[in-house]
Image 1 (spheres, rainbow, N blue to C red):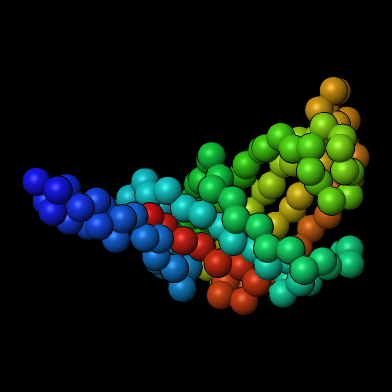
Image 2: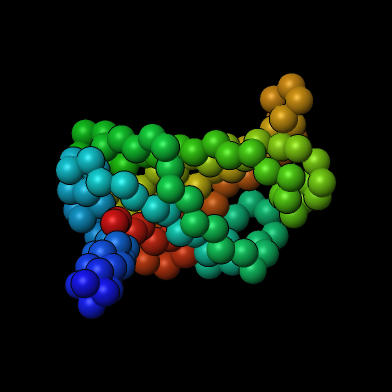
Length: 138
């Protein structure tokens, strides 16, 4: 019985491994199938309008949409007390992702005070799928 339970747990763990989607077509197909996606962005591997830090983020957005078969757009909002630019301050981070059929991705981050949703700052990054921006599906 213990062997069967251990084997089942091992198989379940293997099936939970995320797969890297390397093309826009694969990402679009995953959206069409309703699969959960995770976006991983390496800030220092992307172009940005602010100095880039050696930070990598992984976000599973709560809304994803395929637009006219040529753009995947997604968004996420999360609460944090640990934003590097506002340590100890309660803020919401709103992330907006766009992946185009060309493989170009943009990530726009807006930081807002949790108390009143006033905008603290906003910045945008430009990346390439597979270079600075990756998409994973479970």
